[in-house]
Image 1: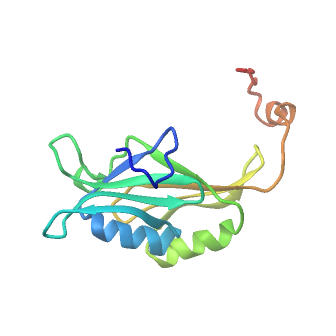
Image 2: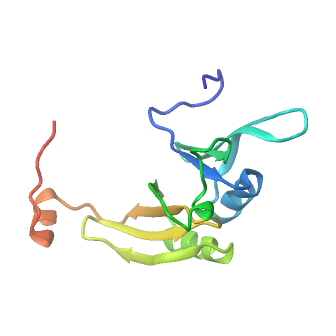
Length: 154
């Protein structure tokens, strides 16, 4: 969907919800996302919606076809998870999500690669990871901490 006034990153994940209108409200309340685009039909039904956070965009859709389902409609199964980078305030962000009803799958914890991260499931079962860089780590430090071998790609 090309729109003249919207920032268009190369990748835009699209999540399916049973109730996309309720999802928009909840994602704003729990995660601080903002509605950046909303297209409705004459009865007010949402035909297309997008939310932003920082420079990220996510589409919030509905179960509009046989192949589209919310995790809530398929026993909580997920085929993807969204990773969101925060600039600051990861612990406060987690508490905000918890107060809004997110299931905290993994509480905030420092990671070997220098981020502090937490994982949450939203009201329909989509899994989200939020992370904030708390220290810069070299590839050598990552290799020592994990035993994994870094391979340059560029």
